[in-house]
Image (tube, rainbow, N blue to C red):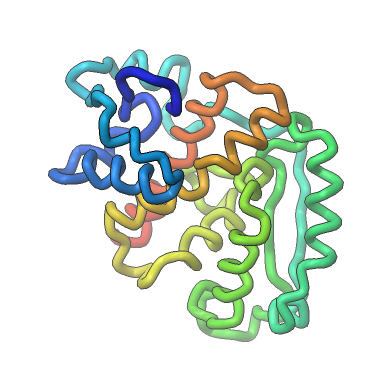
Length: 223
């Protein structure tokens, strides 16, 4: 995506995110703002009419992620850690996974202890939202290790991290979807991919999975 020449939006973003009027320009503006690279405004764009669905999805099967993890790791955040913004335990946990990034890609599921009696959704609890937002800023490469999929029941940690970053989780806009996607699949993800030794095609498939998951979440919430 950062190389010179034309920029294939459909190759990196699910078509559902760029079909609305103004969405393509919003993507460019977001890329400039999040990366600090003004040259994005000078790039040519390839959109859906120029790029076949077969090229975009390759061997992807509907409903299945292109990149799947081979391991399962579960981490339960304690309520006292949420209230005190204590990340020491999860930092040690994730640090252990980063020693072998390819073995642990898309392997983590996140849950929270001691909130079962609270009738609110976790993303509606202010201290949980603050914890999740702070987590994202502190561990900007987190997306490499978390489970991602179109079935939100199988990637609750990813869903919570996304919803916690929205102004209103019940009124998701395409601009918020694109902005969050650009943020989490930007430079930190690319750097983690370099640590793992993957190529551009792998990162493209990784990003498309995230976009599909976001569309799935938003469609489920807005139904």
